[in-house]
Image (cartoon, rainbow, N blue to C red; front, side):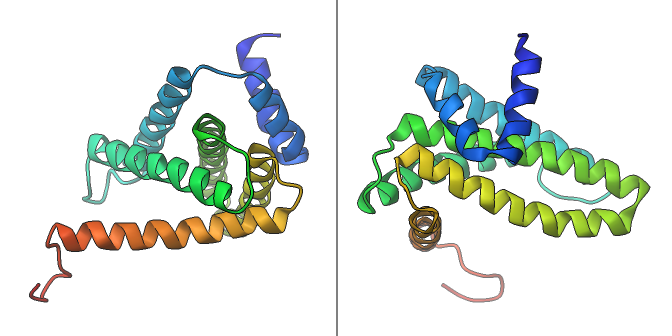
Length: 187
């Protein structure tokens, strides 16, 4: 089976049976260097898609967007690892790196589908967006549960929820430490 065929099969399986797809990916035991490279690659691809969609509007360039995305994803990897472990999970940085990178790749595939559908049928794309949000959550919970060896999707949801809270506090602390204030408000 070729690399492209394997990737396509794993993407489709991520939608049909995300737990099995997660088991297959984790069983590959990829080198951490490859996983970090995958995270950066997905960040760059996300930035290129974002930049292509934003050509008519001013905003950050693709390099700044890719860097910010990679940093945010790295923080998610660390947060999901340690919050998951605090809730009884057994996943390590490598497992969460694979999970986050793969989820970003699947999300990128969904974004491309939405763009293509949106060009032809904008109203259908709006409905697909809502559907993709729920599908993304479902896939994410399954991948996190498998990555942490958890038997409960509710526990995986708690990992997502608490990681979001922890990262929000961490970001608030960093922003405050850097002296960044909302525009028009003295610090």
